[in-house]
Length: 362
Image (cartoon, rainbow, N blue to C red; front, side, top):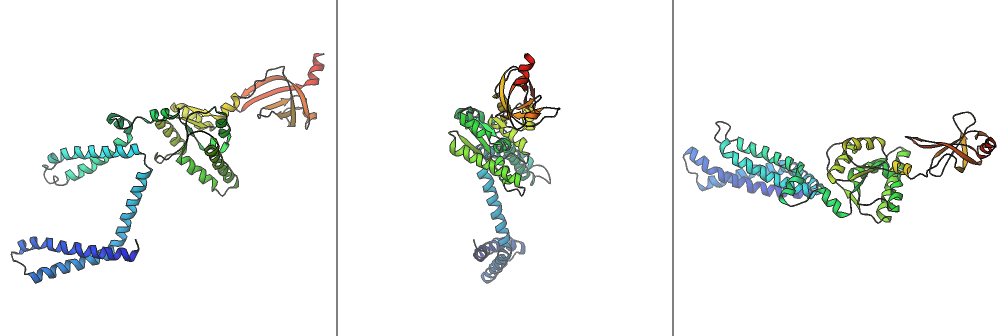
């Protein structure tokens, strides 16, 4: 509504409110003064009240009305973002709190001096406590009334346990290939706060961060368009917490698993009993098993740390350290595996050139 139209509406409202208020005051004023007012004085008093009220509404009303309108829009936006379970449970909690406050009101009203204020204060307090407690205990409360079943049953009923993607695994991109192979079942859950973090990274002034964020958004688009999986974007208010804490809280409320390649988040989930699917662990698990004595061909890229060593890599990224391979850097060399070392960073293979091993055996 435009400012001029709003002022005109408030002016009319002020006239009506002022005239009605002045007329309502005539009775108490007449009883106090002990005299009856003639009709012209009554009309004059009502006109005076209407004019004063209209001026107040005209000048003070617009900023107050806009502020109230902003508050209404803010409350509406919060209610729209809130899950249905939170709204229903909050309403039930408010009703129960007001009932308790009403039952206590008659007893509180008998207290001297404070009796006229305590019923209203108790309604505010018990109403607030009812909303907060019912929202936090919504699954138990709604389950008691038979309105909803717990979130875990709901998601298990769809396809299976939901898989919650974190920011790191989306930016990494391998999750799309894993899903395409069919090894991941159940709905994929993309939290709203993870999307917000990806957008923030994609809008970063740093070129590397910006490219990583855009790559993550491209991976999400690929998952939604190319894969035949149930992909859900969950908007849930989890408070002012860090992203990792929100992921843990969301996984606990949905009864799902967190898909990540973040080492620290993996450890936090293990401590709190949240199931985790780590893409790095999966990549290490599916690497081909190499045993000492096996032969393979490797392209040597660079020198190793020790004297005379050459370093190459398999297609899956496994490092191969070849003793005596320094002079073959830039060549594809047949090697014989001597030992395999599993580290936290991955698997390392140690080998010797095949012709050296054969001469040593001869």
